[in-house]
Length: 125
Image 1 (cartoon, rainbow, N blue to C red):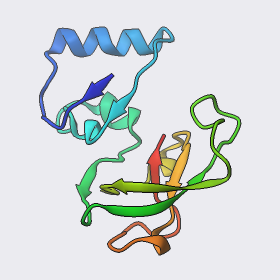
Image 2 (image 1 turned 120 degrees about the horizontal axis):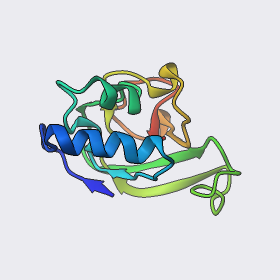
Image 3 (image 1 turned 90 degrees about the vertical axis):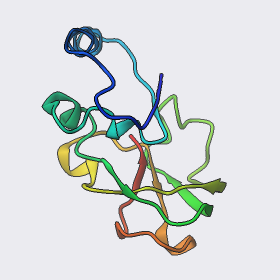
């Protein structure tokens, strides 16, 4: 589990070990702005996140979140959508879905102020 927004967090040997871990079937959870970790000089990281790097976010507020894959173990407990009480709904540099990343949740931008990604705004993938 990564919970960081710093850049250049991992050394070159740590990057190699992390890549191998995931390539061999290991799991990974990134929270908050983890996608921005080491994004500037690690192409493998950019591919992992589908280019979904943090750009900005509107004020913290509530919004409706839509479940894209109700069969996935991470989302099976939700219905088709739910109200998320409070969060920073990050606007991203690119939509990770466009890079072939499996999107699990999207946020409905019509239910809050400040979204900049349009009708397809992934928040979990």
